Amino acid sequence: MPVSTDGDRPRRLCAAALILQLGAACARAPRSSPDASAAPEAGASAAPSPDAGAVAASSPDAGSSPAPPADALAGDEIAPVYPKVEGAPEPLAARLCEALHALPARRKAACCGGGAGFHAGAECTRALSFAARAKAVTLSAEEVGRCVEAMERSLEGCDWVSPLAAPVPPACEGIVRGALGEGARCRSSLECVDGLRCDGAGPTDAGVCRAPRAAGPCGLSVDALAAVTRQARYAEAHPECRGHCAGRACADDVPPGGRCEAHAECGRGRRCVDARCSEAPLPPAGAACLGGLCARRVDARCVDGRCAAPKAEGEACARDSECRAACVRPGGRGDAGAVCGMRCAAR
Image (tube, rainbow, N blue to C red; front, side, top):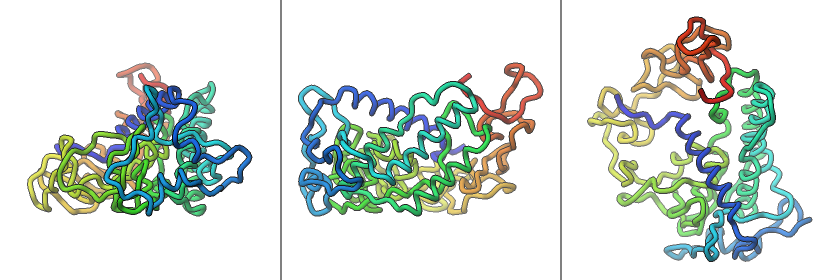
């Protein structure tokens, strides 16, 4: 059975871990850093132009050196790669981050009771506003609007609630677009144009926009901006390797029809089916699963070998994978009468 690389729950767990890491970095950050001058002063307009420091850090014409300076470090303190931003946030950044983080937190609290608790909305707004002001990324009002509407629809009712973060609809993916060319200093792969990766970047380190490598190490860091903006599939537009990452090293893709053990071995857009790489599209609800996978854009999931739409709240179930969130056993684990519903906390 091939190992799936397309599951959303592992990605959401990784993003949650990074958010906690970023929060710790922010708490330890020094009061000032070499990049602090790039932040607009309080009372500035909502979309000020970045100063020379920000341009030097982000302009496609500014960075052609082979490696960026270590501007994220100051003495023994650790500072996040996206420095503090003063003044009002970018409106589109704030709107997108509110929908991705604050909205699901509020609605989950309404379903489960209690307060909204911690979420990464402020960190998302801060980092995305900095990237937008530095002209490293662009946001479309139309695309952000579609994402907000899709999030609102996906959060209706309570049967989506689980201990994990709310799933991100397809309309919210791929909407943070990079503007930096090859050789430019970057803080996230989302800042690079499609086809380029921010080599060397991490939660506390800047990098350089470069083409995917044929060989060498890979998968050694987490992209700070991609995590807080919940762009789980950013690697499709910003691949780290020309082939795929296997065991922390870039490797050539297995051609269609070649033997495989994992979906990733077959390359982007292909799957490992019956130990052979296949170019067949992912099937919709009602069809047989393809290597344990189904078409994500129609929210189908593989249940007993066939793709199925998630069952509605209150429908009988035997496992979590049949439901939007969880298969709930009111009388305890193993009891009859399990139905699809919400699960507010981990069991």
